[in-house]
Length: 93
Image (cartoon, rainbow, N blue to C red; front, side):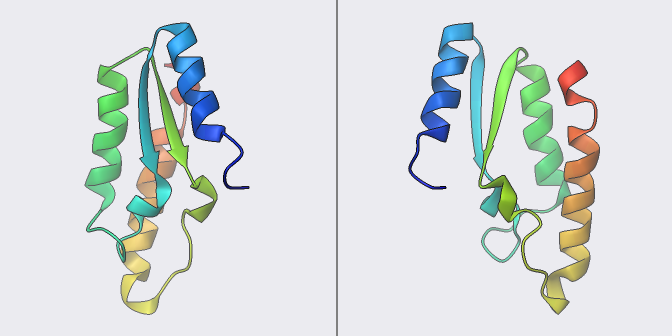
């Protein structure tokens, strides 16, 4: 639910652990809002890898992949696929 302090909690955890905090809103991964594509997803995860140790906080993650519209279906699939590829194994890195 919105407004219960998820972002604040994640920021506080990063501060307590003295790690970098990177915050991204999952709505930004949706091409109808911003001109994101799978390379953008890759770039965000690459930044997180460069800043290790870090906390990559993806707000509204439940909005990904979101609704799929016919004209954007292929792009949504590529973005979602790249997101899944990038998240696989990240806890172990």
